[in-house]
Length: 180
Image 1: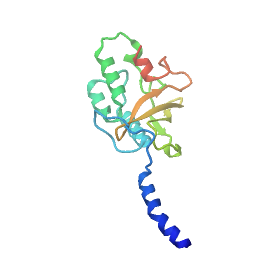
Image 2 (image 1 turned 90 degrees about the vertical axis):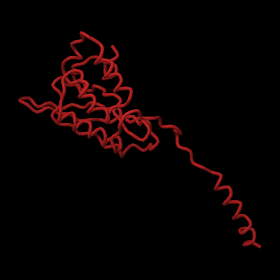
Image 3 (image 1 turned 90 degrees about the horizontal axis):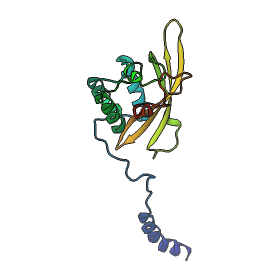
């Protein structure tokens, strides 16, 4: 009798399990207009900083430099940088210094924090600490924060928060500085 009841319930349980689905926190993770770099948020951020260290820029990146940065930048940040580049601004802050870090001279090394400790796999944005340093007669080390966002299946840099002790740019972050 006991086995007959279990046998009778098995198809019902199978039918109910087929009806139960697990929905991600975000059904639509957005789209991506530009090219993409493979990897998770920390890997993409590390690749971005590797490129920045290899080819540092002062002030707003030129169109050629932006083309190299494009796979790493969010659509929003890329378009904001393009717009700022095309406007004739007499803003001295945007024409000199490293826009992607707190220190005007920019870093000579960068280490991005590992994002594997972040438990939410459905996250659309993840802030990552970046330890930056500048070699020289007086070595300097500081931390900034890079905001990574997911666009489609890609992770991209959406903003840089200036967390250094004396940031050379006012406004707190790259996007806030560009919108002034």
